[in-house]
Length: 321
Image (cartoon, rainbow, N blue to C red; front, side, top):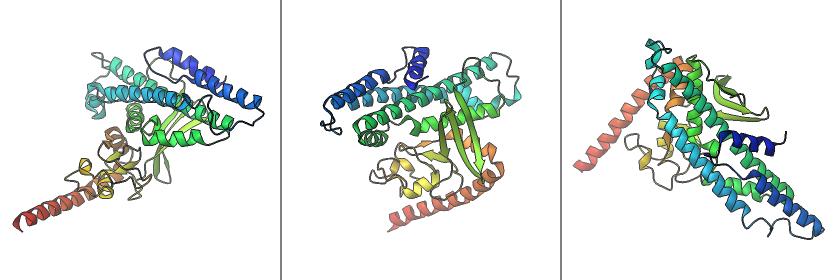
């Protein structure tokens, strides 16, 4: 079955309440361009197209923005729910989860989390496929350039910190050996934390041919991310490493970073102020790497005490002088 049909069937299943991409309509616009180009014997410029450029990219941007906004709202709502917070702290470990409706809540959390992940991935695939189709017809790279611009404007759902947190929370729930939710979640495959030469990564597959891999090695200290934060560009760093690259102290925090400070990887500016601490990911890594986590915790505690002491000594010195 072609992706267009798969996507339409999926969006019908989730109902009219969730926004999506007008994939078939955008595909028809591109096909009109193809026919127009062929009718002109390729004399028409394939880079600048008056047939679809007026509305194609603006429409796609608006639709994908609505998808991202919807996902962020629902993901934050789910991750901030009291039930998940309790599960994250393993409060329920002393209780019988089959009593007082707790089992029902666990099933709901798993099902809703999986459905949100599928929703994000399916729309991300649609976004990428329609841009590739545009470039193929027009024999250009405008689609790729648009995708890069959309990433800078945070319209890439797979680079959202909340997407990483949702993946982590689902693995945490599975680690707790909660019973899987009822319902059709067969589209989601291979959601796991894996290790390759002691280097962890999160992976998630869909439709047997699309796979997401999230590297969990900090690009600054080159170790497993500790007290992980995700910058608004999507890159994950240790909190202390992020403060270092942002030229702020851990006392002031990332919100004190100057707008000119850039991500050390993609060089985007203004990525620190709204960085998100990945609590679910930190829980996941602390449980999967307990020895490393305890050792790093001890080292970080000493280092942070030293940095705090230096900060206040500098403040005191400034007051005296």
